[in-house]
Length: 250
Image (cartoon, rainbow, N blue to C red; front, side):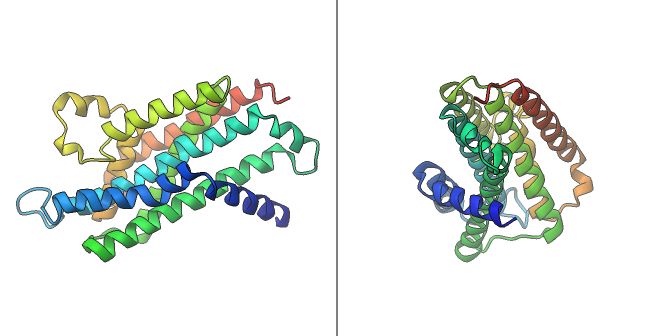
């Protein structure tokens, strides 16, 4: 455990030196909050509702944080280590590549939780957002949504032949899901055609689950989202592991 924590400490320091990952995990979601908060303010999501637009935007921005760590930071770090043959070096030591990969997952999870915590704190202090859900349902929603994003990123790393192809996959799918899932702007503003397309995106269901959990919905009301995200996590993780076994790690 001591060795693992030392590796995590090293990976965390490397993460903070990466401007892209650090900025888009901890800073950019807050900037989005300030921008759209100044536009929508305390506008109700519909006439007579006690929830404002900002109340449903914050959990959506939390999914944006998960997307950055799960679909960009984690897979690109894994792909970069693979291409530079760093895993080969660690396999020659008692540490092994599995410990390094586990540490990267752990560090990205910590950064995800930090990004979401900063976002929620800013939302509470500046816009007094309403959080009606229980801590348990919110935590479960965060963990499942994060697991789904991480598993997709893991699959992209396993499928990509090198860092360039993995980068293309990650950026392409991240930005498609980011703008069509409701993670940047409420999906109620989308035309019907876009809504039909967004229904096929895992991030859309993560946004719906997070918004429901924050609004106080019982998780039983979001069985569809739970099922889809659970299946995405299992299928992508299993497929990624299968592809990884065929990779040349040397």
